[in-house]
Image (cartoon, rainbow, N blue to C red; front, side, top):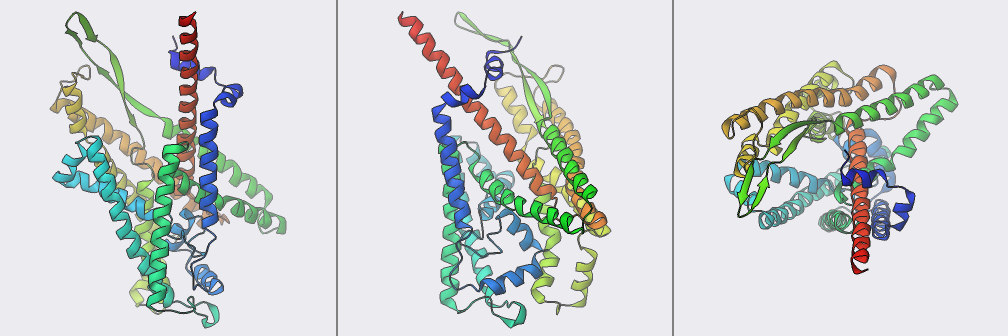
Amino acid sequence: MASAAEQLAANMNFSTFSKATELKKRIWFTLGALIVYRIGTYVPLPGINPQALASIFAQQGGGILGMFDMFAGGALSRMTIFALNIMPYISASIIMQLMTAVSPSMEALKKEGESGRKKINQYTRYLTVLIAAMQAYGIAVGLESMGGSGGAPAVYDPGYFFRFTTVVTLVGGTLFLMWLGEQITARGVGNGISLIIFTGIVANLPGALAGMLELGRTGALHPVAIIGIMVLAVAVIAFIVFVERAQRRILVQYPKRQMGNRMYGGESTHLPLKINTPGVIPPIFASSILLVPTTAASFTAGSGPEWLRDVVALLGLGQPLHIVLYAALIAFFAFFYTAVVFNPQDTADNLKKYGGFIPGIRPGKNTAEYLDYVLTRLTAVGAVYLVFISVLPEILIAELGVPFYFGGTSLLIVVTVTMDTVAQIQSHLLAHQYEGLIKKSKLRGKR
């Protein structure tokens, strides 16, 4: 028999949405905040030569700068006030997660509850400022040494004043986006940081589709190939949704306990374990590492050492060595990051603390070993899934000449953020349904 929550969710329709005034306010606030973000991606830094900058990124778009520019929605290639986007905050958050796994003091702070979480968030903000300042200064110095086609400088008036204004502007832009993401989480539909990255990726999609259709119109790409690419994209999206929603549910039983004259417990629940526990972190880490030689070679403008040019040639997109290393790094980071974010021993201790146990498994050490065994098998399947999703576009680009980046990382982010946002909206609708039922019950009680 369906639960009350499932029955309410089944009865949701457009009339229910139209009555949820609080949800509509949250959606409008989210849309307004994302529009502000997109406007900021077109406000350029002072002292930048846009023509020279466009030619520079046309030469270096295949490196790590191209990947960051994809996440930033084109703000980095246009060198705007949001050029760093929210990536320094993401890097700081990942570093703090790693610190809580390796540092006993940070791990103890994490276990303090709400107060510890607030302190960790504050440390994350401080680290975001430090990372953003370092990246902004590096960008300023790098821009001063760059020149576009024809020798045109990328900066009109280089010097310490330009570096200072660039650092202040870019750090301020990152902090504003961090604040904007928190506001979307608190006053919007949730997942503020993820929605900002999602908006940056989706903003480039219309241009990519228009470019592909233009190639079809001019005859450079066969119409059958265009249809095949679209069908494959839909199939991959359906596959991602299927895997991301898949769970391994471990049965957890709680014994009955008598407190006074009342009996508590005697319930059974499930411990859900996702197949893809690390999410999109492994492909991002793997891409960043493999694109470092390409980016370094692009900055040397072909005048670097011979060994660097050989490494770049072997690690080019679509090369066998690149694909093998990319798959190996994704698998490694899948297991590594899963070990960071999920601790079987802590989970087993929490179950034992509250009297829960897995049927057939003794509490404590045996439970931790069983969870580690199940999680290892799930992570192996998740690693294969991430490798398939990430390597597929590499093969399409190299073998079939797909004209736009049918990216596994970007596609994962878009699909997972969309699913999370839909789940947030459904939870708000469900809360609205419960509020309506409570109001009706109060009115009946008064009668």
